[in-house]
Every structure is written in C-alpha cells, then in structure tokens.
Length: 332
Image (cartoon, rainbow, N blue to C red; front, side, top):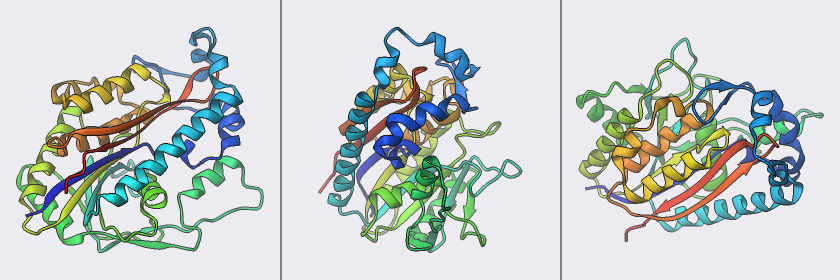
C-alpha cells in the first residue's frame, strides 16, 4: 500500500521569481496599479484607499534595506525547502495548486480538476529585447531551453479521479494539454524552483481558488483533503507519497493576523478553524490559502516540523504577499 511520508507548502508569488532590486524598487512603482485589492475584512478596495490606512512608520518597513533582508530570508527558505523535498525520497508528489485562466477560462472553469496525462508540459521562455523586469520575472517560471515535459504518475492520478467520483466529488479529468497550452504558474514555479534535476512524478490537483462564482468553500476543501488522505493510504502499490501546497498566503494586502492564524491551525491540526474561515477573506491572491487547507487535511497524520514566514511588504500601503514555506515531518 502507498504511504504518505512527507508534505510541504510554498508560496509561488511573482516576488519569488524577482530579483533583489525588483523588491527594493520595482514593486513600489507597480503596486498602485493593481486592480485586485481587498482589505482585511474582505471588502474591495484600491491602493489610494489603502495608503492612508497604513500605520505610522509603514514607509520604514519598505526601505531598500528592509526589502533586501526579506529577499534574503525568502531565498534561504526556498533553498531549505528544496533540500527537504529531495531528502524525502518520494516516488510521487501530489501537487495542489490553482489555475488563473491558464488552462481554464471563465467560460468553462471547474472547481476541482486532476491531470492524469503521462507528462505535463511547461512552456519555453520568450524574451523581448526591452522586457520590463516584471515580465522577466513572469517568464522565469517557464523553461530557458525550450518546452519541457515533466513526468506525471498517470496511473495513480486516474485511479484517484475514479475513486473521488465514487465519493461524490465532481472532478474534471484532464489526460493532456491542447496545442499551445502549458501548466499554470502554481505548478511551473514548483517545477522550476524545487524539482529541477530530479525526475519526480507529480499528480496535479487543480483548484479554482481565484475566479467567482464557483470557488470551493474551506469546508469543501477539508472534505477533499480528507478523501485524498484516505485514498493515498488505500492505493494498492508500495509508493512513498508526498503532498505539496502551492500558493498563498495573504495577498495582495499582507494580513499577518490571518497568516499567523493559518500557521497556528496547521501546527495544531485545527480542522474546525480552517473549515470555518470566512470565504470572504479568501479573495484575490489570498484565495490560494485553499490549497494549503486541502493539503493540511490530506497530511493530518504528519506533524508540522518547519515553517518560515516572511511578511512580504513591498509598498508604503503595506501591499505585498505573506510568503510562507513549510515542511511536515518526513517518515522513514
């Protein structure tokens, strides 16, 4: 039987594909143009409204020196997580991420999908001569040497789809990509930052966290995570299985209270608290917390062992991303 032996979580923010100078100067220039701001109560807002609400001293939190320190902290956390993934000696990694009109569109946008093709394709980097730093950071998630196909544990993925449907989950099944389609950023970032140089098959579990009206509730995410936990244990092959949540935490307004609540609930295995999060708080980038909720419930037998949290403030309005990296215990 398969064994759940390790679990991980990682933000995949554009900040993590950017350079130090981009943190120090670039985001301050572009954040006022962001259209996806919600305040800490989940109400739609904009940069001009957020700026006067920032506490005294907010500008000191985003000096080039402070930004450089946080950049270094995030890079060190990703390096540590990369080594932990390698040390787990996995046979397959169940990768829970979201799609933001990459494979799907709002004309047809499933709440949950599982990809079961033999491989999944990431696109090639395409640079323009005058690309701005932000575009260069976006392109970093793609492949520098041309398109690349990453391995998928197709047989187990197909089995999970059938078993979940038998448990009354409506799972969209994907056995390949259309020409010109590539895995979304939640998956390409993990491949590019953590899984280079190792042939680790993944099972992409794709969640519509971002686009209304059919995002799953936190309660439904808990239910899916519990079902995945039971099914991994029931899979009739001796495999070392890991789970990884891609995305989050709070953004594009950093909410340290929410983020610390999530981390506490992960550590305490507090299913009720996670299931009870008001969906109004899970909008825009904060919606990706759903991926962590699914993964946390799927790996509930494991203890949270290591967490690095970097409040990624990047403007005087305290916009940015709550960057989080985590690893649960690894079993022999």
